[in-house]
Structure formats: structure tokens, C-alpha cells
Length: 498
Ligand SMILES: Nc1nc2c(ncn2[C@@H]2O[C@H](COP(=O)(O)OP(=O)(O)OP(=O)(O)O)[C@@H](O)[C@H]2O)c(=O)[nH]1
Image (cartoon, rainbow, N blue to C red; front, side, top):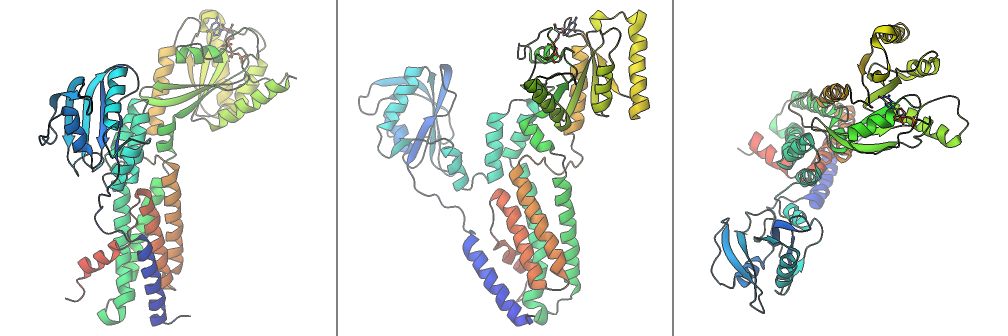
């Protein structure tokens, strides 16, 4: 075993190498780079197009294009005529906005030209900018990269911005905007700071325990705090993949026997012919997917091969296996039952009883073909009773007709409610876990905290190293891996040397 002073030397060595490699306590410095430019609005003909320029030559670009040497006013939309810097030919009349560093998106000097969105205007303006020395056209994502390099956005905000640009539905937009404004980053910063604070007490105990007469109870207190933080992280990790689902879309599977109308339902939901509809059983083989917005939630609806035992067709068999797998993995399951079948429908019933679970919505299709008064009501009752007897739950069901568009609105409402429940957050404080990357760092963090707990009572130096590792893992989510913060807390909270 190492004695206390050896441990301390070992710890100090570890500490100095850790801080030497990841110390980044200085305020972000503006690194002089090329001035970059590009069309920031969408490609193609439009009413207005925005060209963004960022970097040290931005002011020169602006003054060259307006052909005036005057100092631009900050953050003020100004009307002007833009000229080619060499030929002095007028290019367009539009608006420019000047953002002096560091108060711009990238943190550098930035100018935006709002010009008419015709191809020639855009092309000629970009060409005019390119003639100014020190400028070049930007790489994809380079403005955002500069924003990150200059400390304007942390990594989670960059990812939020990217999600915002990709957002297809209302709820995706909301969560991405939240993330871009720093909600997730703030949550992880707080967790990290709590860990730093709790660990700082331990560091102080190691460093000054003998001299400063700190009580060993301090270690126990900090252990309790760290356990509470660990619980919070575990709770956050157990979000049932809500965040990821919201980014990628919840999975909805349409399954059932052949010819039940699965492809017809998919086409109706998609409002287009996405899947082949035919009276020939076994038409759909592969999974046909359509991305939809249901009540603001993103979903991926999959039409699957009709499931039946009696096929010798190898491709159809493969499709049936895929359908079963998809059914298992889906967040919302729709089982389509053809209620127009007269006589023996034992196969459908067998299949239904085989795969239905509490979360499956039983969709009775082709109600246009049944005579409700005569036999459908009693047949439906028989089906529902059998499910209850055999499976022990009352099944959720809906009646529709794809052909006559009956009950589809009702089905959509039902789906919307299910999606709402799926995405509802129990912990209002914690944001949704939107990326696998965050999950991996948080899992690493929890593992380090488990090791910390293991060492805590026997070897405080090793325990402390595990804490540093845990802090580093959380820091990697936002990329603020500066362990020097720890010393700040020691000196602030303990006022050592007073
Ligand atoms: N009368 C009536 N016919 C329907 C309805 N829905 C679908 N059909 C018909 O039923 C047949 C089968 O429809 P599909 O949508 O291809 O059925 P499926 O379940 O995808 O079939 P498979 O690909 O074989 O698994 C077609 O002829 C449809 O026009 C409905 O609500 N009422």
C-alpha cells in the first residue's frame, strides 16, 4: 500500500498531467483566419437571398461592395447598392447588416447581404466577393465551426442547430430550438459543476486533511452528494429513448394477414401511393416506410408483408420474418383485421392472438363491407372476448374503411394520443436525451462513479481519480473538459490560507 505522501505525489503527478493536456482556462481567442463567404439561404430562385461573410476581411468586403469607405453601423439593416469591386458595375440593390466581433454568430466580424434571389444576382455577387484578397468560399458547416471555435456555441448547441435545420415537425423544432439555446448544455454543466463541487471537498481532504483539521465526515458527505448526482444521471439515462425517437421519428408498424388493407392504410396516411395495393394476397414483401408528421410528432410508418403460414415463397417468407421483427421493435403497433371475411378466419385469429400485446391497436378494416346489425357486432364482441380470455386484457380497437375513408381521423387522433404519451417527459427538469453520444458519455460517467464508490472507503486517491474521470466524461458532452475549475472551487469554498 502507498502511504499518504506517496499517494499525494502520485495524485499530484496524475493531476498535473491531466491538467496539462486539457487545461483550457483562458478565454477563447479569435484566431485570425481566411474570410469565408457563402450563400446562407436556400439554393434556387427566391425573393430574397442571404450571403454571409465572416472573418477579418469582412469590413473590406462590405466597403468594396458599397464602394464607400464609411464605418458601417453595427446591427443596423441599411439599404445600399452593391457594385463589383473591380468593374464598378452595379450588381443589385439590397440590404446589408454589419456585425462587429465578437457579437456575431461566428464571433468574428460578419456582414450579411440580403439581395434579390435570382441565380445571376447570387452568382455575380459571390464572384464579386471572391475578387477581394483573403476571401474564399466556405466549407460546409464552417460558419458553425468558427462559432464553436470562438466559444459562441458549445457542442450540444451546435448539434441543436443542426437538428433545427433538419427539423420536420413542430415537436422536433421545439426540442432542437431548446437545445440550440443551451438547455441540454446547461443541464450537463450543472451536473458537472455539482460533481466538481462534491469532489472538491475530497480533493481538499487529500491535500490539506492533515493540516487543515478537516473532518473525515466530509468524505462521507461528498460521497452522499455524489450518489445523489449518480441517481440523477441514471434517471436521465432511463428516458425510454424519447429524445432519440423525437429526433429520428417514432416507429409505427402496420401488420396483419395478407389482403387486410395494410398498404391501403399506409397510402391513406401518406396521402400518396407509397405501397402497391392489389387484391392478390402477399403483394407487399419488403417493409415500405413513409415518414409522417402526426400531431407535430415525427413518425416512420412501416407497411409490412402480410403474415401467413401457408406460403412456400422464400421471398415472402423472408418478408414475413421482417414483419414480425418490425412489429416487436415498433413503438406503436397497428394490427389490421379484415372484418369482411365471412366464415372461417381462424388464421387471422391465430395470428392476432399470437402477436397482439397491450400496446397494439386493433384496427378492423373494411367496415364498409359488413352488415353491422346482422353479424358484425356479435363477431367483433367474440374477437374482443377471446382476446380478453386468452391474453388477459381489453384490447384497444378502431373501425375503419380505407376504401371509403371511414374512421381514419379517429385513428389519427388515437395515434396522436399514443405519441403524446410516448414522448411525455416525467422529469420536467431534465431535457430529452437526444443523441447516442450523450448516452455513451453519461454511461462512462456512471461507470466511473461506480468505481469511485468502490474505492471511496479504502483508497481515497483512486476514488478521487475516478471522480475526475466522471467529470471529464460529462465535460466531453459539451467539450468543456477543463479540470482546473476544481481548484477554483477549492479556493472559493474553502478560503484556504485565510
Ligand atoms: N371494400 C374494401 N376494400 C378494401 C379496403 N381496404 C383495402 N381494400 C382492398 O383490399 C385489397 C387488399 O388491399 P391491400 O391494401 O393491398 O392489402 P394488404 O394488407 O397490403 O395486402 P398484402 O400486401 O397482401 O399483405 C385491395 O383490393 C384493396 O382495394 C376497405 O376498407 N374496403
